[in-house]
Amino acid sequence: MLSLSEILTRAYVYTKNHKSLWFFGFFLTGWGVMNFVRRVNLNADHLDVYYRYILDYALNHPLQLTLSIVSLIVLIVLASLVGAIARSSIIHAADELEKEAPISLRSVLKQATKSVWRVFFAGLFTNAAIIFFFSWLALPLWMVFKNGFEFRGFVLIITALLIFIPIIIVL
Image (cartoon, rainbow, N blue to C red; front, side):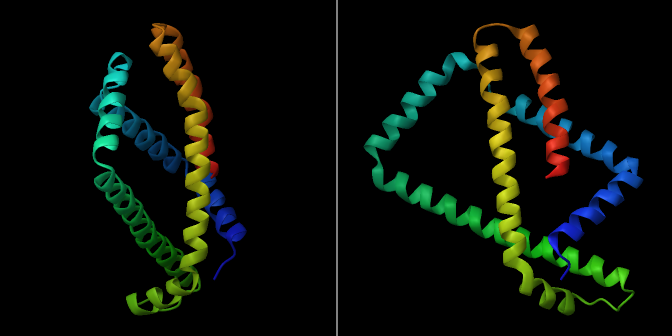
C-alpha cells in the first residue's frame, strides 16, 4: 500500500492541477452548510427548553438513554468502518490503475482489508480535527448571534468559511 504522505502528496497535485475540484469542494461545502442552517432550527431562544426536555428524559429514562448512546456509538463505528473499507478500496484501485494492472472487485477488497485500520484511524484523526476546528469557530459565532449582532455574525461566518474550508481541504 502507498504511504499516507504519498497519498496526500498525490491528492494535492491532483487538486492543484484541476481547479474544477476546488470549485466543487467549495460548492458542496457551502451547499451542505446552507442545508444544515435551513433545516435545523437554530433559534437560541428555545435552547433552554430543549436542554430541559433532554435533561428530563435522561433523568426519567436512564436505561433507554444508555441504550441509545451505546447504539449510536456502535452505528457510528460501523459506518466509519464501512467508509474506511470504501476509502481503502478506492486508494488501492487508483494505485492499480496507475500501475496499469487489471482490477477486479475481489482483488481490490483483498488489498483493502490489509490497510483498512490505517485508513480508519487516519479518518478518525481527520474527523476529530475537523470537529475541533468547527467547534472552535462555531461557539463564538453562536454567542454573537445570541446577543443580536446579526451583521457581525454574518461577517464572522464569511471569515470562518475562509478559514475553515482550506483546513478541510488540507486535512
